[in-house]
Length: 499
Ligand SMILES: Cc1cc2nc3c(=O)[nH]c(=O)nc-3n(C[C@H](O)[C@H](O)[C@H](O)COP(=O)(O)OP(=O)(O)OC[C@H]3O[C@@H](n4cnc5c(N)ncnc54)[C@H](O)[C@@H]3O)c2cc1C
Image (cartoon, helix red, strand yellow):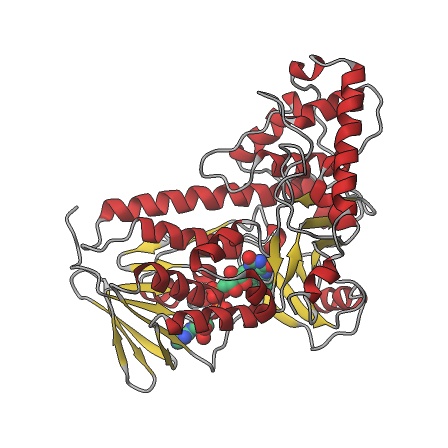
């Protein structure tokens, strides 16, 4: 298909939440000198105001924007995240961490978990996470920026951030406005399209002001003002695999040490997040309204807060799934307008950021071409499906028998792509990462082992070392990790320097 627009000279971003201001920041940083960028947001509508836990690729994104870490953590009241602790996800009372970074030491062609599986079969009692630097630091509330374990080639600490969503949007806004992004406040009442191509030509505010553009970025939240309400793109519903459909969010007073990890605590029909920030803690209950009433969900949340709530719990309904096309005609959707996966693995902000990188890579500066749209959509879809599978895995592998919700999750059909991963791991301990997979092998291993999917077999290379060598390997790793953690300051001490 030929070009269907002229050169892109003007971008209009609709929405000023996390997605909108991320788009403004990244597009102004990369294209701001050659393209005019305007952002429209409505104070009356406001932002969803949740989304406070991230994953390690945010460091590279911040770096691309030129953010200095100390100022970033100060301005967003941020803290460090070393992983996510899952509680009650196997049996009630069970705990494991999806810790960032590596576990153990990999050998050529054979990753560490094979050696651990051999040891387990031989009756040894070491826990898999005894060999995770991130977990050992998290357990003791410690943190330091360790690139490599001293004197070795072992990977150091991998980390991400927790932050206040409102302050994050402000931080991005300041950055964007200094780079020339124009902000218009007002509520859009009409979206106009070309009669021949259906391309969006302009948006009209309640005040009558018309904002024209060549490319429109829809960051209008769940409503999908442009991508759905105007372009009727359609939505692929995934709630048969991920049945939770509501969240209640409430901040609480910060008490005690600020933990350097997110907690995810499974309840009767969903789970609760706990995100520690410098000035408060973010909490929320994600649940399935088919199995629990809103009132019971609220009571469950309030009963498990651990400190004083600072507001009334706020209800956020959602439908899990994805917009059938993230890029449709001259509109690209990011954030909640593009689809929604519950925040179990804190992936939504990452999807915004990786999508923005992709848009810049595929940027249609000489006019929009269908082949470019198709490739962008193909890559985005694959990426989101891998993440969807990873999240479903947590539900599928639960071993709880105390509620109908969890039993039904155990018995549900899962996508073939996930079934294959689980069968492969069970049979041979093998895991793989496709090029468009966000999660590395070690992430899949931790969730599968953490929730009780123990392989029947492992790689024969695990037997190429003697029992004495295996003892030595385990002892050396534990000593190195122990020494490294002992030399770290507390997370609170680290935060003192940035507050
Ligand atoms: C319960 C919950 C927990 C989450 N937790 C995490 C997490 O821990 N980690 C993570 O990565 N992600 C998380 N997310 C996702 C994250 O919150 C979102 O990705 C992020 O906030 C993006 O939101 P948004 O900018 O798309 O939408 P919003 O914040 O809803 O912003 C929409 C914007 O569009 C504007 N707008 C809408 N209609 C109009 C109109 N007619 N005229 C003008 N302006 C308009 C609004 O004013 C607003 O500025 C979570 C999401 C939910 C629901």
